[in-house]
Length: 284
Image (cartoon, rainbow, N blue to C red; front, side, top):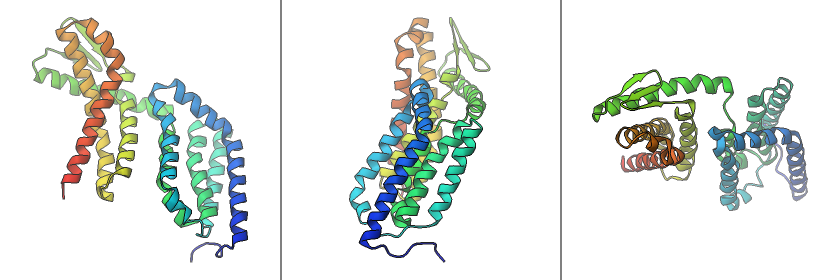
């Protein structure tokens, strides 16, 4: 037995719109400190610069589908949305009291989806489920998780890069996350671990998958491909850096190449992701 209201009249629709706008204003007031903190971290933390684009992408997707959404206003509200609102409010209160940023931040998309489900109904909420849940990608990982992931990825990147370098004939000795070449020592620091490119590639693959004509299963596979793609793209950067230092000199690795290394990773990852999408589309 579903939990839904009766079919709304024109008057009730107006009331729902007013109630919806009131909820939006209240939510903005409640979440303003959380949003301000998020924006500050996006601007200061290079690992999450892509977070600035997430709300814009979500907004553009909803704006793109506005015509189909306008026909969903007739759908009745769903009381299950109220449960989500209560859960989101609980996360916000608990996170604020405990000064736990991650908890308060993940409550944002939950609050938006719950409010939409409660006031607009399952049909409307279902149509904007992806752009709302996509907002989770704007939330930085808790530092305890971030640091636990970083060092293993540093070791993995160094190990894979050393294998490639030896394969192409470059003499290299690896000690942990340090690659020692003739005349140059390359340390795979936290910024070069690949975690930054991993978060970016996962985000990019989700957008790719959403707009692609692939089936649901292939879309999931494409998003899953973003993990090896990010690792491969980061490995390409490390190998190119090591080769440059080995053949040209340390100035090559520490100079202009270092400044554009992030762009190299992004372009390499983008090309590999497009290749994966093409292969998945080709497979019947």
